[in-house]
Length: 205
Image (cartoon, rainbow, N blue to C red; front, side, top):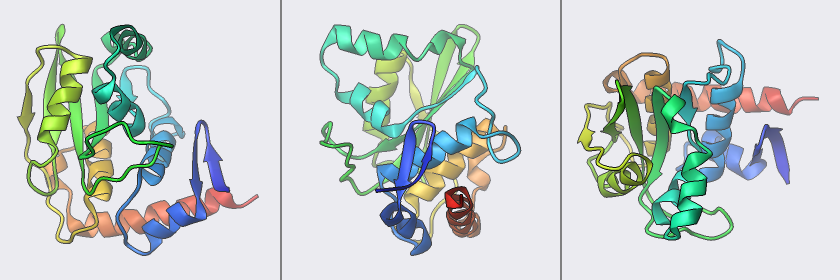
C-alpha cells in the first residue's frame, strides 16, 4: 500500500525505510523522488520546466530493451526530445526488462543528454567506476542515434549502498547548473535524511 502518491509515482513504507536505514535504493524510491523533484514547485523542485526531461528509470530501461520498432518510436515520440535542452535518466545495470516494475540490479549511474545546437551530447556520471556505461550507451543510441557518450567527472561514494542517492544528486546538480563532480558523500548522507523527512511531511494529511 502506498504511503504517499505524487503525480504518477508512489512510495511505500518499505521504500521509505530504505532511505532511513541507509540501504540501497530500488526503482520505487528513485522514480518517486525524480517525479517529485521534476514537478514540485521551486525551490524544492524544478516546477516541471518544458525544456528539461527528468526521465523515469523504468521508462529508460524499457526503451533500452524495446525491440519492436513501432513501439520504440511511439515511446520516444512521446518524450518530445527536440524540445529539450537537457535529458537526465538514472541507468541501472540490469540486463532485461524485468517484471512488475521491480529493479533487481546492484548499481545506479546517470546518463545526461545536453543540447548543443541541433545535436545532443551524452555524458555518463558514475559514483563508482563505469559498470553501467554500456547500458547508458545503448539508451543514448535509442534516444539520439549516433550520439557518443563520454565518461564525465563525478563525485565518488565511500560505501557500497549510496549509488542511487549519488545518481539523484547528479541529476539535481545538472538541472540546477551545478557540477556533479562536486557531489560528496556527506551530501549523499544529508540527502537521504532530507528525502525521508520530506516524504513524511507529504504523508501527513
